Amino acid sequence: MAKSGENFIINPDELSPDAFAYYRPNHYGAAVRERLRESAAEHGIARVLATAEDPTGQIAVERFVKVSAGIAELAMPDFDEDALLLAAQQYFALFAWDGPADKEAGYWVEESSLLDEDGQPATGRRFPEFYEIFDIAEDIFAYPERYAEFANPYATLLSNLTLKLRHKMSGEQFERWKTAYLGYLGGVELELYFRDRGKVPSLEEFGYMREETSAVGVVATLLEVQLGTELSDEEWMSKQVRLALNLINSRVTKDNEIMSFDIEKAEGRAELSLFTIMMDQLGCSMEDAYNQVMELREEHKDALEKLENQPQRPDANTRILRLVRGLRLWAHGYLRFVKEHPHYKPDLEEPT
Image (cartoon, rainbow, N blue to C red; front, side, top):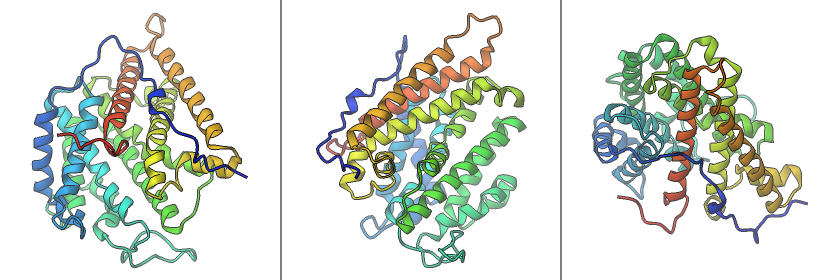
């Protein structure tokens, strides 16, 4: 019988960040927050985030602005203002899913792409704009101009982002970004499937889901552009890059799971927590699950540092090494963000 872990307290201070010779948040953060508010207003995002508690949707928009710009500010310290805005817009496009996904799990909309237990289209869920994206994302990526004035604000937001990235990226880079984004949407849809039906995924299903929803592939393509580390397809699929992406994915996923477990448990939505699944399927206590996760996290942290510290090798690929360092710096900034943000520490006030 698994133990609930009610008497076990997670200590977020045990999450040690990477050691960097220098680190400073991006000083364009305030300017980007203001430009992100303007972008959200331009695309009418508040309309589809409105709820009874937030009838104008502006509270939700402001939360997403602070989250999106906050992560970009801490995780991408070397970006110039335009690049930081692009990263923040990317985060906004990702995190704008969280409102409907978190708050409306269990409510169905018409014409959902999800299927019920009999394999038939599920109906009755709210937020149809949100679910429509699952069906039209590939078309947006192929023909973004068609969606510039589309009725769905999510579509216009993604169309605008697609046009900007197609201008900045090479054809190979854009294909990588598109593949990563579609994977992210697939992970979100899978998470909704489990939440809607009250089902608990296997550890293997959970690993796949979090591998996609961490959006590490999306971040890596943005870093590749900004750092000037354009890789060939062969380099992108190399063992070194695959290992780096897998290690970073494992690292940020575990950081997020550790930081969010207590608040998710308090809100009664910890059924898709890694710890809940481990206790259920491995029959272990919360303390044992936590210790296993922390041990693996530290192993992956050390492996990443070792992977980066290879420039002395004559066969070292400097572009790959710059990307690995950029990913480590991103993971460092992401951890700083989740340790400071009130979503993970509800006793804190919202940052201004």
